[in-house]
Amino acid sequence: MTGPPLDTAMGRELSLEDRLSIHELVSLHGHLMDDGAFERLVELFTPDVVYDVSSMGGGELVGIAAVAEAAKAMGDRNPLGHHVTNVVIVTSGGSEASVRSKGIGVLADGSVGSVVYEDLVVRVPDGWRITRRRALPRRTPLQHDG
Image (cartoon, rainbow, N blue to C red; front, side, top):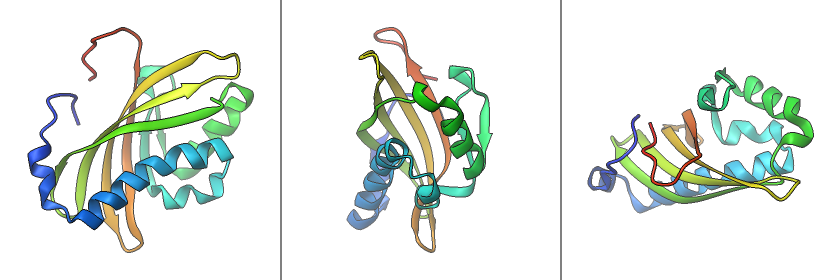
């Protein structure tokens, strides 16, 4: 996936129910991570998810267990809150969709960070799941993500 432009016209192929499910899926990330509910990450990711945090020095995490272990290893350096917002379905093809969203992380010392998430979500028997996520930190204003 690449950054802008956002081509939301193709996103109309999804039903309203699918669109709502995808929005709720992306929003679930913050709740599960902040609660430390790593056993529930199966509700968020496919088993073989690739979570790319290369731009933050973490490389690619492959599989749900790797995502959970990375969060556990961060311990108290994890944000107090992951706030996901501005969810936009960029393109869709029926059983998969590209999604962009913004994340705001509030750290224990009161500092705040911003990130752009680029997700590929797929329809599975139990609903929608993220199969690929790339997190791109926002470090300067008006930067092009990608």
